[in-house]
Length: 579
Image (cartoon, rainbow, N blue to C red; front, side, top):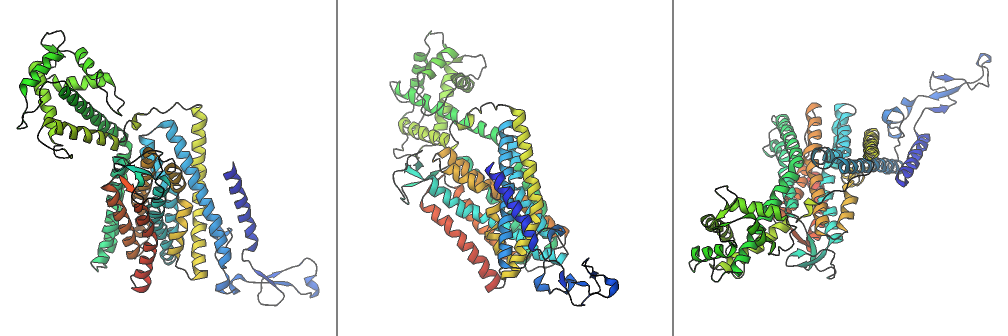
């Protein structure tokens, strides 16, 4: 309610500002034939008329074009700054409504099509609309001038998410690091650059890899400038547009099917954890070693172990006997479904499919498991060819893999939503309202930025680069909130949201931008801006792809990239003359 009320107040201020809109000036001098009566004097008696000075007589420096013909405009610096603040807040309001409506819809319908396709697109919608209107209005010359606002928003949104927001989330969400992993809700080391930090799961690293791949269209569209070719520029824009659209579709499909992929990966990790636990248990309860000194399978010990497990001495192991074995093992930090574990162990061993494991199948199954475990030989401090070191290393790796995949968090059950019809109606109305506000006020915001640029002689790119991302990035507030909970799960979600938002910038928003450039025949002249996007995306993306723990010092690296980006664009465009 508070948000709606504040939005209403700003709308009233915006309408009130219309009183200062430029109009035709009343004059008592005969400068035009446009006459108007004051309803007091009788013109038939030769009384003087009130005359209007035509708007065209006003100097160009004192005039401005009203968006839609009635929205307020001004040529003053303070006036345009006020309009940018008001319109920017309204765009922020639109982004908030879209974000809240998406979350409600996701709560009702769950992941899959909604979570993978609709929510990411709605999150990038305000940016896409702003980019669209920046190149649609006016003549080709006007569009070429204003499209720099769209590029500033595109570059600024990407850079601010991966620098200021990324670094802030590390600082806010930092916990004590123990064995290179952040401990949930434990923050006793203060601002230790190496002793505190955050940890994410492996899926967050995958999101960072996807983000790096999404910059390919930027490279394609920039190739003619690198090769100093003018004839191929339009073709490069078209090819980049096609590649960007393909990436958009592919990314949305990945998002749709990601929960299924994630569950399959987690199930496999759990099964390997069961194998590790069973092998360690069997090693503990055998009189000899599972492997010989040469690292070969010790069949004699394995056969003795089989007869020990065969309680009814019928020469086979049943599901009941396997279940008794698994129940007796304490599986650390794994929420294990015993029936599922028994079924998977049986499927690994029972090659005859008769629901029993005979002695030969048992030896063969243990052999396969030990072969799997040998892949991790040499990964621990006590590495060696003996079964003890191999199984210890295998156990550590399976536990680590299980944690990287997010543990059992993906299997958490979402509580049923009360009154789903009302929630659905509320979600749809918020989405419609957010879309309407964004569509109505995007064009006035672009005009205000352009006018402010004219009034201050500050390039519109820098204004949109710094200011507009704050108005359209609803991910910023939610990211900080999630990070402040100081848990690995919420930290993973935080960085996944940031990487996902940048990816949508690089595929959806760039597709809109490239379509504008191609359809309207605009010139692609954004070499420095593209270079900044490439540097920030590749540096942060590659950095996040190869590690899941980020000490506190990494936040300062990210934060320093922001002023570096601004300085780089300025030097390339206004010192070296790239643009």
